[in-house]
Image (tube, rainbow, N blue to C red):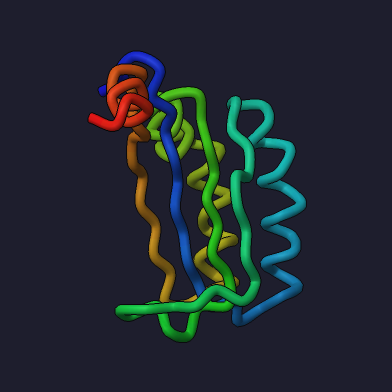
Length: 113
């Protein structure tokens, strides 16, 4: 885990079924993300869902300084409480944590290799 220079990402899709409850989640998770070094990288309220995400009305990518930071944030007690709100406010949720490209891979890519 934690290739040099590689960031960690959360990728999530969901269908929001309780907007009021989801707004509560957003209001709490935003400040918490900043505390743990994360930030919303991309968000779409009208994603084009494919392969079992066709009914999603939300897609979000959050970026963290490293894969370790992304995993630790997700597994933290604070986020476990927040995720219960998210899960109650949505259905058909997907959630994936992945590691971005490391510095060597970025350099190879830039050089066309």
